[in-house]
Image 1 (cartoon, one colour):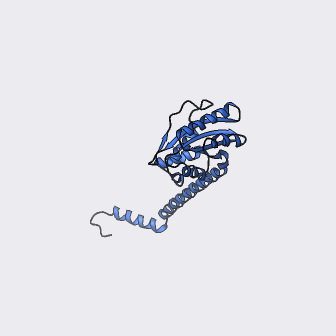
Image 2 (cartoon, one colour; image 1 turned 180 degrees about the vertical axis):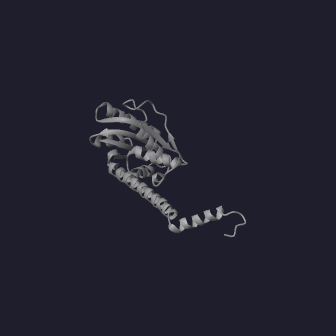
Image 3 (cartoon, helix red, strand yellow; image 1 turned 120 degrees about the horizontal axis):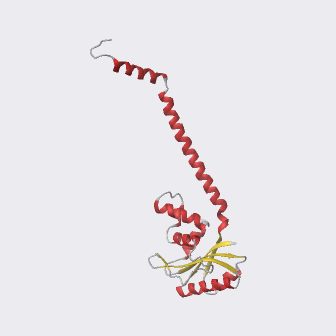
Length: 207
């Protein structure tokens, strides 16, 4: 099952050991490791992406889902709700690229406190014991979420967005129709005709 994983450690050294443990599990066939990233939160709450000691186990390096998740961990996850433009729109794109629920992102943010380091990875695993054992033994707090688990929520979101667009189009069409009907009213034509006759009357004419 394709999953996104965040393991929070107390130090860079521990996170690096966790990264090597994941690569060892991949080499042994216990998991498939698609992409990884290591980030640290400083005392001011800013996220710093650590230097990588090489590409991911499958040569993919920092994958789209992992990169997007790191971007979301660096800012308020709530920005993805109702955002439409600018940087917020970028956050929306990151949110859907990640493919996990907002609650997972918020939980990861709560655990990644200033001074801590997180290992972020996209993996395929059949059961959780190998990864949990390897990372928890190195002091990691392990969070994971299956990416497909939000497919239904994304579908519902898209349907709601489409319905909103349809309503907006219907409202616009109704306003345009009302304007057209107004121009076709008999009194409107009578008034327009009177104005036309007045404009055509010779100067100085009393009739």
